[in-house]
Image 1: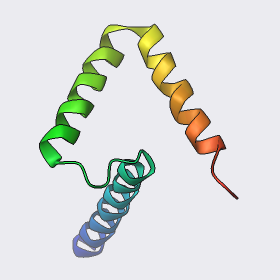
Image 2 (image 1 turned 180 degrees about the horizontal axis):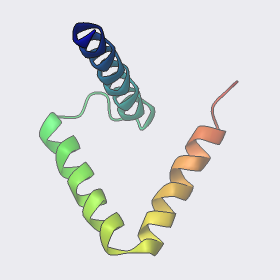
Image 3 (image 1 turned 120 degrees about the vertical axis):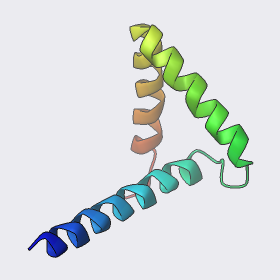
Length: 71
């Protein structure tokens, strides 16, 4: 039983990582260096934690990007 749970957890983790990678591609950052990507994400995370207005601005940008997707 524990082994089945571990397998399910690994599958869930893998799926989440694939989805997060897809966000990098969607943002047009596929070919950027990992250090740049990490720096950008750290900076954005700090800004989002420091300011609710900045958090809302980021969310609006993301929502627009998702709404622009072809169905």
